[in-house]
Image 1 (cartoon, one colour):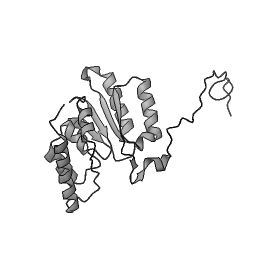
Image 2 (image 1 turned 180 degrees about the vertical axis):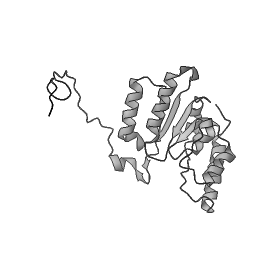
Image 3 (image 1 turned 135 degrees about the vertical axis):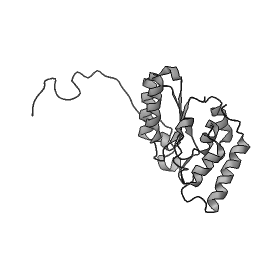
Image 4 (image 1 turned 90 degrees about the vertical axis):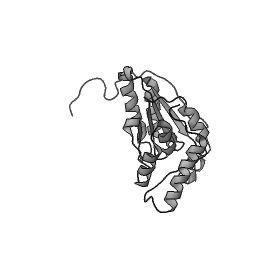
Length: 197
């Protein structure tokens, strides 16, 4: 692992941020983590220093585990950058736009594949609501289809902002899809001859 953080040190950092926020020292949105310390430490046991770590607005733990110094991270959070933490020198980037980081991570994975001497991989973290969006599915399919060095991590707290995810999407993990294959005898559009309108 890149750092020596423990669940206790991660929780202590978030508590420090919470106290600063509640004291009015942070005049911007803050999204705190908690309850996932063990899982992230286990995941970051596989993350190398030359790997990219990408995510959305809840990135304090990931930044710390990737090696961003606590004081630097804290100062940036106090300065209002909690939801847009970007440290290219540590290969950590984020986006506050729902799903916005996923195509960026895909581009980084393409770059890693085209320049294999760097041997970097990309880890992209997103919430369970984002993982149900079209951009997520499209990027996962593209990454799989092109064997890109990217790993998608869905952080499932069963919430979409303040609403249970199942209330938004329903309870299903029920497959309602039918699929069949066929060979189309025609071109995608038209009837095979170029016609000027």
